[in-house]
Each structure stands twice: as structure tokens, then as C-alpha cells.
Image (cartoon, rainbow, N blue to C red; front, side, top):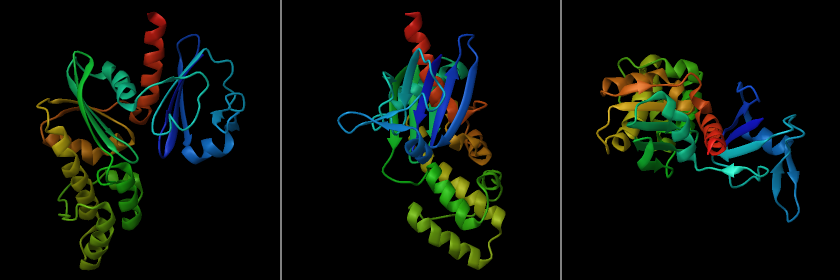
Length: 254
């Protein structure tokens, strides 16, 4: 069996491939992984306990994500998030495309040409435009993420560019009586506006949208309205873990 692990800031995603090539996907909150499946190692380090997870025997493991360097994952191949996501996304687009990954704490945009990474940009200095921003705004609005993601029509203008101060602006708009659907659409549109300058660095219309943020139908709508041909995988949040498997299989073939 081969295992791809994407240790994100919010969730850990697993992609397990058996000897027949079948792939099983599942996830868990990142704190659960740390509390339940870490074993102490000599020297004070930690390692994943694959036995406790019921995953033995494993032939090979590849790891990526926010926590890939914080947790020892057996004799895993450690892969950068960008390379893992590009490996997972190649099956969805032509030789040239932009990869957009809206994760829990950052947003990544990668230019791919001839199936290789040519350039990339990462917004990891501010929560605005990330999954954390969307989660916080959903809490302030009192809606689920699924409900927030549905709204794109007539978005309310949100002028605050800081994720921290956006909460106060939203509360003020609620007090003014702005309808909830418009506020939800405004949050989604403001997220798009924060991502757009990263995308506009390269004139490339093909876009593969991955990460948990790709579940946001409103973001997909705004991207399409901006002229992008958007492809969203069936399970976009597992793209990094799937990409780890792709890297393992590529190494096996060579």
C-alpha cells in the first residue's frame, strides 16, 4: 500500500492506494492527529503511529502540507505543497494552466507550463483570502460555510482589506439592515478581489481550483466571470494528498 498525507493547518488529508490501484480518501482535524496518533521518538521528536491508525504494512509514504516538517512521517518522501498540488492537478488540465489553492491559512497561485512549475506566488502574511477568513465571516454572519458559499448575487461592497477589521465592518452592515444574502455575496466577492491580483500576474485562462476553498461556488462564479476556464476536482481538498501518491507512483515507474 502507498499513502499520501497532506498535513494542513486545519485538517489532515489521506490518500491510500492499495495493491489493485484503488484509492481511499479520508481526513481528520489536525489536532486529532497530534493527540491520537503521535508517538514519542528518541531525541524528543514525534512520528506518526501508522500501526495505531491501522495502516500497516505500508510500502511507501509521501507527505506534504503545513505540518510536513513538524511531524516525522516514517521514511516518507517529503514534498513541498506547491509540487504536491501541481502533481495532483496535472490530470485535470492541459500543459499550461494556473493552479489556485485556497487553503486554511494561505492562498497559493502557481503557473504551470509544459507540466512544470514556472512561477508561483503565496499569500501567507494575512488571513484575508484564505479559508480562515471565510470561516470567521460565516461565524459572524451566523451561517454555515455551505450557505455562505452559495451567494454571489448583488454583493455588498466591503471596503476593509484586513480580515480582523472585516468582522467589525460586517457587524456594522448587519446593524444597517443589509440583507444576509448580499453580505454573504460581499464576503465571497471580497475574497475574489484579494485573490485576483495574484492571478493577474500571468495571462493564462486555464485554471485548476483546489483546496477546501474550491468548494465555494461563489468564488468559482466570480472566477468564471473574470474569464477563467475553471476546473474543480471532485474532491478538491484531497488534491495535495493525491499529488503525493502521484509522486510516489512516478518514482516507482522510474
